[in-house]
Image 1 (cartoon, helix red, strand yellow):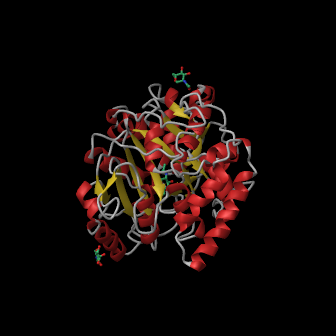
Image 2: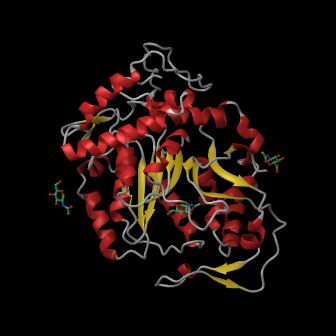
Image 3: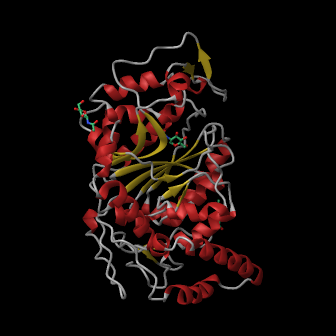
Length: 431
Ligand SMILES: *[C@@H]1O[C@H](CO)[C@@H](O)[C@H](O)[C@H]1NC(C)=O
Ligand SMILES: *[C@@H]1O[C@H](CO)[C@@H](O)[C@H](O)[C@H]1NC(C)=O
Ligand SMILES: *[C@@H]1O[C@H](CO)[C@@H](O)[C@H](O)[C@H]1NC(C)=O
């Protein structure tokens, strides 16, 4: 554990003493409720709590990750920071629809870091006034305008749920981000109902230790029920040619399975390298283009387009890690939508070590717990990081290469060790 300065040591706990976490979280929740009624400062409480629970030398520190060496106990020194040139930059798309402005804004605050880039998209189902409100919010946030790394798409796209317009929209954001900056290393696609479980300092720190060519994409060639329900039906997405929203519809006859390439399917949530995004957008190889046209008539195209492109391309098929870096729970068998995450999911969320989770309802209390416990973010401010300076705190950018990595970086390091550290991902590629 290399972050103890008044911090929690959650991840060390959860490795050896899984029962401690639920107790910890529930005591915290009780305290949270109590304190909100008493209107007391939470931080004062937390430091007492830390002292009580975490100064105990008997608490185990967990196994040392392979990629990310932990400082030795009992008085850990922080890991040396990576040189600024090694710290990556992430390009985010955060999309939303009608009624999502406030939720999207909150997700943006939780994700904000001056090194990164953000494209915000409210689809055409949301009225122009909402897009104007979002643009006004960005224009009125002096930190965002000073750094200049938050862009709102003003010419919005029609996006149909389960339709291929979703892929078009993601590619649109990729193209904007490629044009806006030559500097970013990874692209991450999120929606307003996603939320981070680690700070951006934690994410950038952990990603600075990774090979820059890794794409994170959950995938399989075993189509199962999807062969009949996804690969054979031919659908039309009216979002490509209608001004008002209407649902996709089916065409007859159905089509055969392709034999010019192999189909892959998986999660619609992914982390893509800049190199792979360029390959998809620039189209010097024709495969991304022909597959895009093929997927125009494919039900739930976002769950297969990028998987099929990457696994059918020799330059990239060895770079894919079979994970979407999200905590998502489904019914068994899966229904159309994942579970809505609430307070009861917090323990599983944290012990998944995932950097993101979905999906959350607007202003669900669990988001405040994540803010407090995992991001240390207070209301109406961005997630604090090593870059923060100015008064009020984080109103200005000091050194954006300074990362205050916290417990989140250790959780993420554990996940990366499991996925990447051992080279295990090579056994599970494009199968
Ligand atoms: C812009 O910000 C100021 C203070 O930060 C606030 O008083 C004002 O209402 C904001 N305007 C809009 C349009 O959000
Ligand atoms: C990108 O994000 C949106 C959320 O708005 C999601 O619905 C979509 O399926 C995602 N994935 C891809 C590959 O476009
Ligand atoms: C990548 O593609 C090449 C050529 O098609 C193939 O020989 C190789 O086995 C593939 N690798 C993976 C991991 O799928």
